[in-house]
Image (cartoon, rainbow, N blue to C red):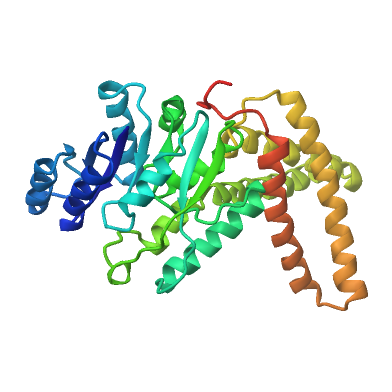
Amino acid sequence: MLVLVPAYEPDDRLVRLIEDLGAHLPDARILVVDDGSGPSHDRVFEDAAAAGADVMRQPENRGKGAALKLGFAWAVEHVPGSPITTADCDGQHRPDDIAAVADRVAPRTLVLGGRRFTGDVPLRSKLGNAISRTIFRAVTGSAVHDTQTGLRAFAPDLLPWLAQVEGDRFEYEFNQLLQARRAGVELVEVPIATVYLDENESSHFRPLQDSLRIYAPLVKFAGSSLIGFVVDLVALLVFMQLTGHLLGSVVAARLLSIAVNFAVNRGLVFRDSGSPAGSATRYLVLAGVMLAANAGLMSLLVTRWGLPLLPAKIAVELVLFVLSYGVQHRLVFRGRPRGAPPA
């Protein structure tokens, strides 16, 4: 087994982790990937190597996802056929928990060490995971308690897929979870201790930039919807100018915007490789259901419950936006994404 530890500007907790792993998992090989920490951290990496780890040094910071991918590539070359467990370098993962997660490795399975966020947990960590957990469940229908855990285990059959998952920074691990179901990968969660040291001050997570990266799939979906709206509006104006027929122009513009939105979602948002005819049929059915749901919810909120039109419209659109993304992710574009492991 290989324990892969990405590290950016680590302290002596990295060395202690390697020493403890040597006691708990004496047969495991340990690889530390330095994500461009710079010369000021040479001593820590030298001590890590002296404690028994293989160390890869990178000249510049490229992100946690890029460091993990480098480690996976190293594993293919140096320990082919070996299961891999990833762990953070800051002492948040105890050696016994790492061993417990590694023990659950199975083919086509992504094993997660799931924290329960009990005890003295920094507010930003508790809130951030609650938000990502809620969004993940709404989008995929899968319940994962800790979507941000860095303690994960993989059988070697997942390495080709892991190399294809998008993202070079913190979003990479969230993208693994988003793409797992469509790639035929089972998610298994093993409860682990919740450990935060010094209010998690050693974390390099940037709340704004990295959150945007993590939620990029939803951002792309929103962009696709915006493109569809613009196409609908411009086409309506053009068709009205050419024909002077309102109903025909509305229908033609809407059909064009639906076609554009379908193409963008299939090719760029969900990267679907299934049958275009099948996904187009399901997409049209969904569009009809969403239209009916929009009308029904607006009637309920405005006509029966007396809500003002604008707040009701915003609320309905937000709810249907999340539902539409989830249905398209799970049912409409259900062909395996490019790079998924073979069945």
